[in-house]
Image (tube, rainbow over all chains, first blue to last red; front, side, top):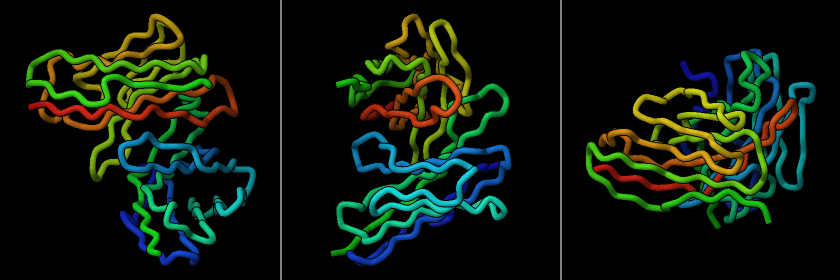
Length: 115
Length: 114
């Protein structure tokens, strides 16, 4: 059963508008969440993260929101730029079972930002 | 600058052959991971290591093995390659310890098994 779900395989947004990528998780033991960005033919690169003790973390145009009660997080990109077109992976981590540092990834959402 | 490299970047092999994919990191990270990426599946963990001589099975470990003889390298071996192992493989590393969740990824190896 998927513990981290990204239910939208793709998202298309106009340049300058807001992009909102969503992620749901099922395991309440997760306490750290990350977003990775991946361009074709490259490895994923870390974008932004949030600890479960916070509900918002901001870094420039990127903001991640965490709603623990709903087990939901979202990544907001404002304003969206064509260079943001990539696959975005949501990942979660927890301090359980000795698997410290392991990440569970969602299937990814492909964002296309149209000029 | 510290980095993580993978070789080869592309590999074509035949069913039944043994294949080894290399991963080398200069971050001096204790933790290293191997993932495969397939359409519709995202990134799935194959094997991981928390330090020298330590190896653990991930979600999709059947048909794969790893060994960790030093901090820098975690080679991934496909004992007898199968067409189902055609995929893009990513190696990653991270610091050990609480609070160090960010993993740094290599550029990937595209493997085709014919």
